[in-house]
Structures are given as C-alpha cells and as structure tokens.
Image 1: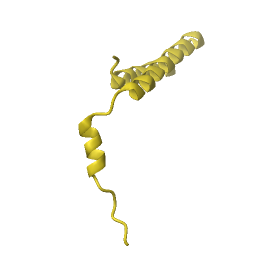
Image 2 (image 1 turned 180 degrees about the vertical axis):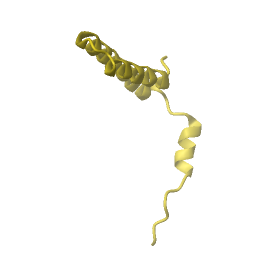
Image 3 (image 1 turned 90 degrees about the horizontal axis):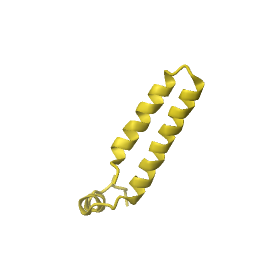
Length: 68
C-alpha cells in the first residue's frame, strides 16, 4: 500500500522540478510522472478504509446550530 501523503508530496516535487527544467522533453516527462503519482494518490485515497475513530468524530461533531 502506498502512503497517500508521500505520493502527493512526490507529485509536488516533480512538478516543482519540471517548472525549473529548460528541456521541454524532460519537463514533459517530469509532469507525466507527477500525473502518475497524483493518480496513484487518488486511487489509494479511495481504497483506504475509513477508520472507526474518524467515522465517530464525523458522527459526533455537530455543525453550527440552526435556529428552530
């Protein structure tokens, strides 16, 4: 399993590197690699099961109170 945060961080680093690259072929390749890491992060984020604690937090926290 891939850590989503690591994949997002790697994609960001690759895009930063691409922004500073002069060779358009290398820049395009770096951006494609960043896209791949972003796609992996999306897949892993959707595949990660929700934790019981996270679900309980969502269910027990109340939003702003609405007047009746």
